[in-house]
Image (cartoon, rainbow, N blue to C red; front, side, top):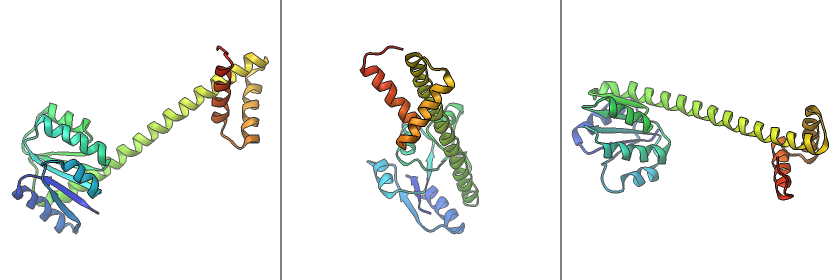
Amino acid sequence: MRIVIVDDSGLRATVLEDGLREAGYDDIHLVPPLGAWVAKLERMAPDVVLMDLGSPSRDSLEEMLAVSRALARPIAMFVDQSDDQMIGAAIDAGVSAYVVDGLRKERVKPILDLAIRRFNAFAKMQADLDEARSALADRKTIDRAKALLMKSRDLPEPEAYALLRSTAMNQGRKIVEVAEALITAHSLLGGTE
């Protein structure tokens, strides 16, 4: 597992690195938060990012958001001081673990594990949500196509659905693809719903 430590303080980075090495990790890289460090992180493609920011500012949290969006990987953030607003901003930025005043090498492994588990749980929830949204959008498209068939061919709803389904099977396509094609054709022919 490739782990990147983002830190501008050599002492704190040493604590993180010692904790990781004692836990058996050896693919560890240190990146100071200077210059185009987000692009550098993208090129390194880490599996996990540990950030030690001491006292995070609004700018550092915006950079964290950029890291989170660019990498889509678990991020654990260590800070010395914080408040509710900063914690909320960190969570919104995609931080999987936010640790205040807890930088000790024996805590690094459990926090790393927590960040990975929370990231995976959130990613699964996001995938489930995306799937549900897609299914709902497909359902609406099929319902629109059924309504067009019911109106134009004077069919009851079960027969309109059966026609969409049999057409999809005959063409080796999904029902939603046939429904989209029907809606598009109807629109091109000047039809209104």
